[in-house]
Amino acid sequence: MSSVYSDPIHGTHPEPIDHFDRLPDSLLLLVFNMIGDVKALGRCCVVSRRFHSLVPQVENVVVRVDCVISDDDCSPSSSVKSRADGPFSTLFRLVFGGIVKPLQALGQFLGPERPSLNKTLNTSSSSSLSVGLGGGEDGERDQGGVTHHSPTQVLRNFNELRFLRIELPGGELGIDDGVLLKWRADFGSTLDSCVILGAASVFNNVHFQVPDHGNDGFCINNGSNVGNGDDNGSIPESFYTSGGLKLRVVWTISSLIAASARHYLLQSIIAEHKTLDSLVLTDADGQGVLCMNGEQLQELRVKPLSASSASKRTLVPALNMRLWYAPHLDLPDGVVLQGATLVAIRPSEQSASKKEVSDASWLSSAFEEPYGTAAKMLVKRRTYCLEMNSF
Image 1 (cartoon, rainbow, N blue to C red):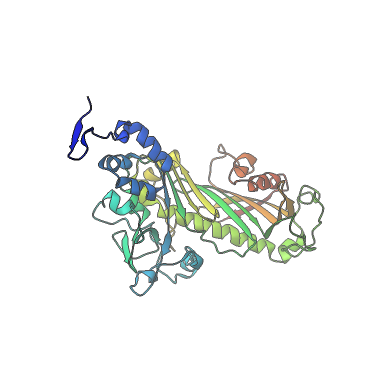
Image 2 (cartoon, rainbow, N blue to C red):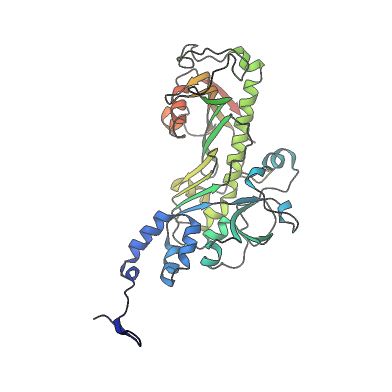
């Protein structure tokens, strides 16, 4: 029997039914897991006490970081870095020059209190998610009237986290317009594998006239079959003399540094969330992706990472690398890559029982189309072997 309430003007009426109360918790959790976005979940927390109690049980969370804050930005007179300033713009000065303080963890993890869920997740004009490059000990900063919460601080409110994706506002590597540079790295307690795809220039052959000379300083053939076996996959001599090889080495080292820095920053998140089965740290530019599966996450919990003595990043082990190159690569959708380069990297000490670096399946699956196709085309060309010491 439904309850009634008395209205002095219109008489007695049945009490309105809250249909959300009729939904089981399991169904609401399914909806919350499909939402995923941590800010949207924060807004759900303030809807009702029931929502507030269910959101911490969400298993699938996406954290989109709004900004990156450096030590200099922590001063009262400074303002938040905009995306145009370049996220992690100090990374290379940090690694090579030691000009700024070491890169800290994703936010600060030393806060003594566990903040309330709706306080840290509910976003408004005065609240944002940020990645800290140093300073502060409470994971929260008040800067120019804007309160910044670190991803780690926010994620502490989730008790059953299984799938986590963190998206930075942009890639760490500053590259020129028209240049392609993408990487994917898989980590356990150290680097398991890394794939890097680069090109001196990218354009659509429908709207662009191919120049007579490539960006690496040698002539290219405008024929549609170029880069597909006509030169037997050999690297031309001009690649070495015009700086082409040096540029690829810079791309490789830079990508490895970026990947190892991201890995180092995830330690506290991984330690706090024992239920994690998958973790992805990417960026809005689609430049780099760091991935860790359940086995790799457990490996890091059991075997602590080795940190580089020079900076706040994971030590990169000695590596074996395979390189494939094409001066000109036509992809099926009309995209053309000039100076296309694919580098597959595995630790030198890795067991031969694991997938080989020349296995095209894991190389092509590292990138979305059309770049997965580019990887498949490149591995059919001549392979060049390189080695790199630990750094």
